[in-house]
Length: 510
Image (cartoon, rainbow, N blue to C red; front, side, top):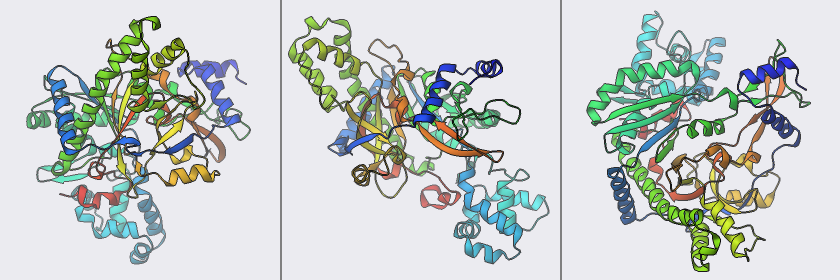
């Protein structure tokens, strides 16, 4: 299948030949659907915190910071913003082919709203200046053209993190800047060091760095912190091979093999390179102006408090299971450890598995306790998109809490689809992670993924059809073998921007 030249290409990009052969087998056999057992809900896998508990966990987290706990905020920020402007791209094409602006806007409601409420956008003054500088009239066509294209703001080709989202009296802010401000409020060490890490695309890293140079000292002065901001890129070695419809390697016109980025699940490698006691994960487009940040900050600290409080007990069991021989541990200890694993860390043994032998139970518990820990915020369903919280069957037969995308669930199974419809909550990508064991040693996070939860899609290149493969999602299959807790968080903490007109919602306006 692979020539000497192919193998050299594979070696040069840092890819592993065995992994590529596995990917080709995945194309041939497909990925199995995940079997969900029931939707997680409040008191059945989802914790609902009282006001008193929120205060308690916030205080516990703050106390841990005072005693040297080192937090970090991780933000995937490489995604292009082009999907935000789908309706505007369609409108621009129509406007270029039809002179009647009113007719085009009457057919494209999103473009009409964009044009009618244009002054509310944080980027409106920049755009008006560019249009005037180019000697054009300010109308719907010029607004959309200069917003999206290279001669203007080029927003159609930039990542979301670099677009102006919010207006302030002192100027405008991008999501990148909002994450700096927000991160300073809950991801700052006792020393005043606020660490943030952004994953970015290679072509945009220098733009992010330039923006950081412009705003860093201003925010440090205003927030009384010192920022340590780092960047990384999705590793070429994590790209997946593309194949043709016969599952043979897809060839470029020059004969080389086509590799494609394998989705955000590849970022488990970037996360694995970081060293912190607590890692917050949040999407780049889920930000709000300062006037609405308080609930987000409070709940972020509360989730971290839940994480660290449960980690203390997890470490107790982990230490005993790792440092003592099974003979030295009595049945009462093993029963208590089993109860904590099943009812707090939400991992239940395989349905047909009963550990009658003490030693067998010991090794099962030791394996399950020696895993990273995550707490995931979950929002009540209110029509927003996102993966959902479910009890699911894992490849080893155990049942545990998983963040599941609808694409992972068998569309032909009435029973599975009924469970999906009963979901009461969705995942807003609001995670707090602990990636070290009781000795302070970092886990190798790549060892806790479920490779069988990938995804295959059909694409095309140069007019030829191909099949592409995505790795298990970062908070789905890439973390499926973690100990997991779900906590309900309010809808106020979830304000994503999926289309440009989402910026016209009250939550994004000053």
